[in-house]
Length: 250
Image: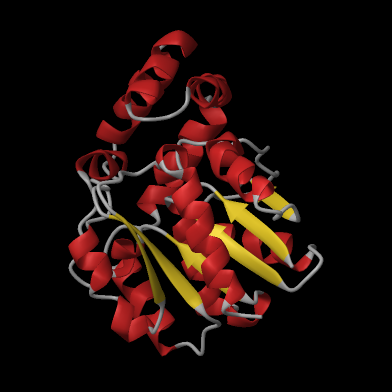
């Protein structure tokens, strides 16, 4: 079974490395890392970086893989995976994501996201982010919990293309877009799913995410006291949890 991993913003696929290492140690090696356009991958000509376009990109990327596919999403990668499940649930054997709070009816975007969604303020915020040196950005990522080599890799990857994609993606996801996605997802005949519940993620409150477990009929992997980059902090626990979920599908 192919395992496909999709990361988010402002990341590259390097964010997955500790988890991939842990999975490899457990014999899981048929792994593909999918980088969304603008986030560690080139932006195709004419790509508008709106949520629906990322879902279309992900559909094409998954269809090109040897199936069946078990897909895992993080941050906006989770958003893309949930969009894929709402529109094309037949594309994968299973799905697992964090950040399921994003589709809760009461979810409100965090402060930085709201800045990106605001004309003028968003451009200023992106300019400030891009204006920092790679060393400054790497130090910030490392302070937030990323491994030093991953922080350095991510700090080298952003640029004008990523900045433009950030603005268009978030402006295409102003509420009620995400809550409408949640309604579509609940109404869809979905394959088995897993909620990765990093309880201290400041961007996607656990209390909202947990309210989506019953409507979605999904399994629940709790990562107590873990934040947004749980795949760096507790890769062994996360690997064991994913394998246990995948084993229920066989």
